[in-house]
Length: 104
Image 1 (cartoon, rainbow, N blue to C red):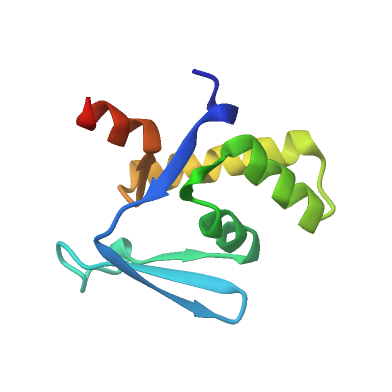
Image 2: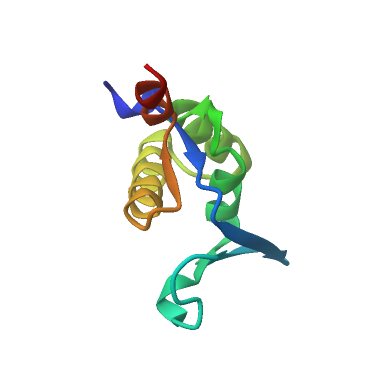
């Protein structure tokens, strides 16, 4: 499946706080005292984070980033896909298709 049509959803085992234009993500499992397990998203990352709702496709997120910031669609696509990959690798999000497969 083309990543631009995929939808991602946040995991439930963390808390977030918005401070100015940044989002702080703190996992509530594992060793929270380990600063490597705390994630900070900048303004653009926070916008992407907002759309990781299981309903919005990657291409729709890219469109939102392009309409909010002066960036080419190609740059936005690369940045959004890179961020989603990092968040998925960190265990903060998963593909909403994963939920569907578990239910089948």
